[in-house]
Image 1 (cartoon, rainbow, N blue to C red):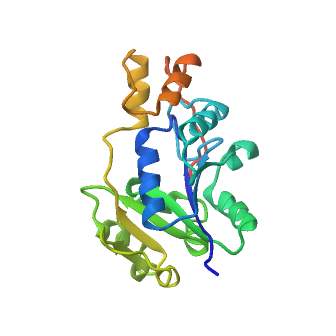
Image 2 (tube, rainbow, N blue to C red; image 1 turned 30 degrees about the horizontal axis):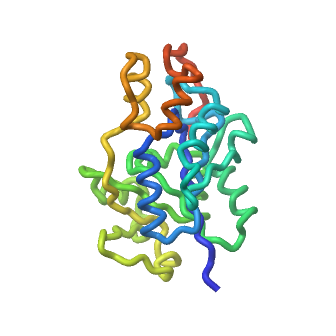
Length: 230
């Protein structure tokens, strides 16, 4: 029997935007993932100074953004747990729920380049596979340099025309995939909201309405220090 394939797409999602949704949909299709779990963090450990909406609001916006996406699934696993969200702890819980599945950690190239700041990062790499969404200007050599010799031969650059094979999952740990990127960011969306500008083309319509109804991102919150790591 074919093993189930589950993607983990974690982040602050402050707020979730159309770029997140499009990238995850592309990865889900390319790797034939049965589902991609969108996991908003409760307290992001890697954010040091940023206006972050309450976890319940970020969770609800993820639910609204994905309500018509069968294989993109909102997961409250970190929001329900509360406290600082670390990838290694979330990964352990996901593996307990799906002990026989292939687990793929889905993230952008920029986040992957900071992997050495994560808690128990080598153990995370050993316990799941990574799908790194590359963008123009990202060099595969940069990823190889971050991981060092131990994982250097475990990285595969997946060409756009390549058909992903299950045999690769035992041979490699990191798959770099070029994804057409939307020119949109959560930072820009928050700035536009504060300036009273439209974000209609940047977030799903239901998310835009939620931001308006709950008056999110209208003011900068005081800077707050949080724990370092991922």
